[in-house]
Amino acid sequence: MNTFDTKDVMIEVIDLHKYFKDLHVLKGINTKITRSEVVAVMGPSGGGKSTFLRCLNRLEEPSSGHIFVEGVDIMSPYIDINKVRTEIGMVFQSFNLFPHLTALQNIKLAPMNVRKISDEEATDRGYKLLDKVGLREKANVYPEQLSGGQQQRIAIARALAMQPQIMFFDEPTSALDPEMIGEVLEVMENMATEGMTMVVVSHEMGFIREAASRVLFLADGLLVEEGAPEEIFNNPQHNRTKDFLSKIL
Amino acid sequence: MTESIPTLRSDPNKFLRRTPIWFTWVRHWNFIIVTFILLLAYGIFLLPDPGADPTPAYYLNLFLFILFTLAWSANILAERDKRELFQGVVAFVMIGILCWLFYLYSGTEWDKLADQFFAWDRMTGYWGILWGGLKVSLMLAAFSGVFSILVGLIVAILRFYNHPTINIFLIAYIDVFRSMPMIVIMVVLFFALPYLGINLGSIMATIVALSLGYGAYASEAFRAGFEAVHTGQIEASRSLGISRWQTIRMIVLPQAIPIVIPTLTGIIISMFKDTAIAAVVAAPELLKRARELYTQSTSPTPLIAAAIIYLLVIIPMIRIVNMLEKRTKGAK
Figure 1 (cartoon, rainbow over the protein chains, first blue to last red):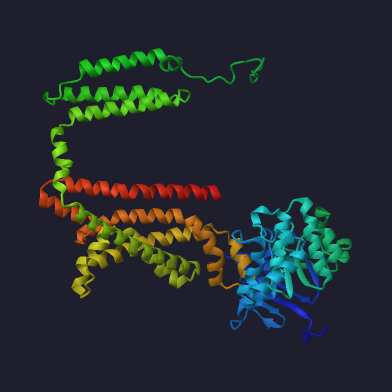
Figure 2 (cartoon, rainbow over the protein chains, first blue to last red; figure 1 turned 60 degrees about the horizontal axis):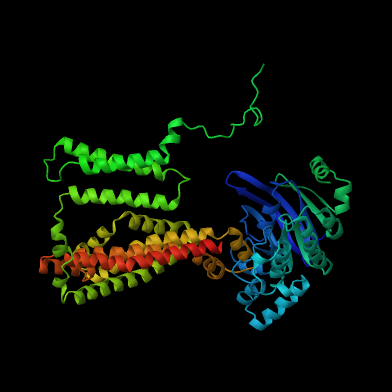
């Protein structure tokens, strides 16, 4: 690929390192994520998957390396990281809905206060997103009255309300009861078919097979292997990958 | 044969409480009644004459009687199965006996109580002055309360940014003012600063001292509240592109304030009590007024009146704090 052609590269990661005190968590990650790609990040726990994802929007400050989002180095001191984050939606394992706000208020908060759109427009957008995740009737309900799956769908709607270019999912179904995983994955699959660029830390094999265009296998802070899901699942090249897949399959 | 672990079948007493045998009769009604009669007999016949010479035997006698009383009531209060009403009565009897002993043996001149402590007829014209003092106290508490909460909030918010250099100054402020007794802060502000040309006056010195002193406590309370907000909340907010200040305002504060309110109310109560220290720097507040009237009238009644006024103001405040605490617990 022509390295100067950045037209369709959404995120480019160059030699990303992260230390927690003396612990070397990421040991030089290099990868590119292009538009409309759905990238699944897999690997053993403690391998740096979440840290990798959180470094990409500087929720975790990278120790060294460069991250280009739409061709702009977000490690540069001239960058307002808040503006970068408006283009990157993030969904967390523990939902992290704001408990003092209703579902609709959760969704409206960031567009109104960061994008500065009007209340009517935000409400309108909020209801559309609630329709999209199938929770219109829960608009005025507080998070504690929602099930885990419903909370996660609201969290997705909240992230989408900023109309981001990219969506990050940090183990979105790990904290859910088995019968609720399906409803969340369904929303994610719809987003993938609509062409959203997504980076998903997940071990949901069904979803990855179905929706992911590429799998990154991260272990011990290194990008051990990457490729199409079928390729990785059926014909893993590295022992580390084989070992891991044999345990979860 | 090897010793096997007893089963319920082999040892039906397996789960029985193994208490020494005297425990069973010590807790028996008969024993309790007999010991009470003995206690009464001791109290009536064996106690020394209140006017007698305070010899060692006199004190030993009193001490033994108190010990007997305490042991008798402890025996009943320690039993979980006894009826609560009965235990309450016993507790009152115990306290009554102790009060009665104090009345008899403390050497207090009780006949003077009414015309010294409660000489209300000497208070004519004084109540208005005390009321004026209370108004000053309340004013001091209100201003210092608002300022200390503001100081605490600002310090806590600045600490939330976790800037290493700013943090050093903030921590220094908190440490200095939390480790200085309030009276010292006030005296320094009022008596020492004028030598540098800063004349605060007693009211201002009090407000500044209370605001800075209690601001340090309030900032710690706010910080605890901020820390009680889950980090995931802040991450979720920041990941949406919401700035740090907006995150504090829209996400952290609304969740932290309900947690902090009981602590803050407690701090305000302590502060109201500490307005009495302002008497040292001659602020015309309640205690200062009461002391003036005490010298004027040569009767301790104004002091007693001031004590009662403090009580009447603060007890409702404490009730409110307890209510707030219950409500925050209920909300969780």
